[in-house]
Length: 74
Image (cartoon, rainbow, N blue to C red):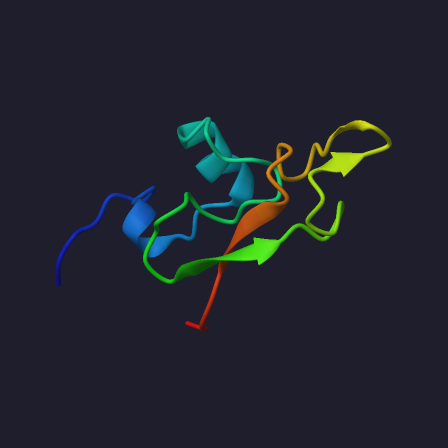
């Protein structure tokens, strides 16, 4: 039996907040960084792809109109 550190990231899923803290380029609506295997681009559900909400950049997508989502199930 192999010993693993009790806080090993390989045995835990990282929360959205942890991923965002590790990568400041993520927007609040992103589930992973762009280009991450198993992810794809989707229309932002908050601004519906427009990039703006009430005349200001959408806080969910950072004004891009799209977010990165996990695709496929594991």
